Image 1: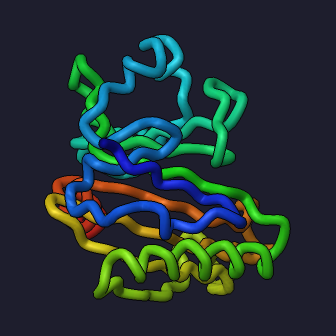
Image 2: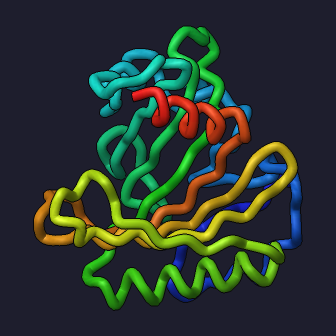
Length: 191
């Protein structure tokens, strides 16, 4: 049975049983290994926002969709997918949901709640804080926890953007196979 990975301020992860397989989790009903074609037409997928213009070897395409734009999301304001651009089946290798916050206090509260629940389920989550390179002012802080599972990981991130950038602060939950993580690390190092 698939476990739902939800961000809701008043609902706890305690009702979820521990699962170590990355494919056991869902975000908005979708899981790693599913085909995007189960949820969207090829025409809709082609209209998703993507990062094809950024330097990359394009092993994976990163695409985003926002609530009510192409899908009526129940928990998140938007989603991000990683899939192989030449794959005719559009298999999902990573997916995440993000929830925009009213203010930093709301972001901190949600982040602490979600990461706290995940820490109860998965010992050994590693907390890291970085200054995001997309903000030249150096004032955008991202704090995240990574939880390793068989063949992948779950990450919950508190993205606190400064006024120097146009992005809205948000909380994101990402599930990803190791192949995508390795690609991100190696591809960023090559560009």
